[in-house]
Image 1 (cartoon, rainbow, N blue to C red):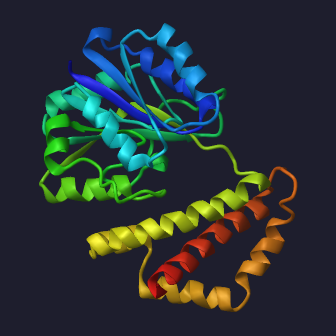
Image 2: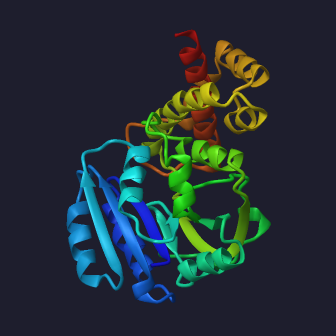
Amino acid sequence: MRATIQLCTYNRAHLLGRVLDACFEQTHPDDDYEIVLVNDGSTDGTAEVIAAARGRATCAFTVVDQPNAGLARARNAGIARARGERIIFIDDDVLVTPPFVAEHLRSDTAHPFAIVRGAVINTESFERLPVPSWTLANYSGNFFWTSNVSVPLPILRRVGNFTEAFREYGWEDIELGLRLRYAGVRGVLNRFAVAFHHKPRPRSGNVAGMVRQARAQARTAIQLRERYDTWRVVLATGDDALRRTYHRARRMFGAVARLEARVGPLDRDRPLDARELAAAHALASEAYYAELDAVARV
C-alpha cells in the first residue's frame, strides 16, 4: 500500500463527515491507500458520524478510539496503525480535493525521500469553496504543517514521531519538522495537492476561546524554545526580547482594557465587524505575550 491519510479528530462532528467523504473520493486506486482516523476522546456526535462513514468507505478505513490525550499522542497512535509507504497528514477541518493522494504520490515518485508540502487554501465555509488553485497568497513558510504534508513512513519512524510532551495546542508539528530538517530531510511543494482549510470568521462567542488558545500556544512555545534555542524558533514563536518588551509596555499602559472595549460585549454571540475582529486578534496576541512572561517567571 502506497499511502496512508492520517487525521485526528476532537469534537468536530459537524465537519468530519464531509472531511472523510473527500478522503474516500480520490482519483487514486482505492486498494492502494488507506485512512487512519484517531478519535481523541470526542464527546459530541463524532462516534455516530464515524459509524455512518464506515458504510460509505471505499478504501481501507481504520478508526482508533482513545481518551482525550492531545494531538501529539493521538498522531502517534495513528502512525502506529499506518501501513502506507508514505503517510499524509491532514486535520479534521481540512477538505481534500480528488487528486490529493495521487499528487502526493506523484511527488513521492520524483522525490522519494522528501517531505511533500501540499497547498492549503483557507475558506470560511465548505459550502462555498474558492477555486482550488494555489497562489502566493496561500504561501506558508512552515516546513512541516500537518494541515497538508506527507513524509515517507520509515523516515518518520526513524526520527521518532511526534513528541508527546506537547500536550496543549501548538508547535508539535513544527518541532517534528525541525527534527526532520536536522536529519537532512528536504522539503518540496506540490501546489496541485490542494486542501481547503475551514477557517470561519470569528464571532463574539469565539473571542474567549481565541484568548485561551493563545495562552496555550505560548506555553508550548516555551517548550519549543527550551528544546531549540535557534533563530528559526525565535522567528516562528515571536519570543524575543524586543517583542516581549513592546507587548509588556502595551499591557502596562492599558492596551488590554482598550481592546476589550473595542471588541464589545461577549455575553451574546454576534458577528464581529472589521474593527472588532482586529481588536479580537490583538487581544489574543496580548494574551500570548502575557503568558510568555508568566511562564518565564515561574
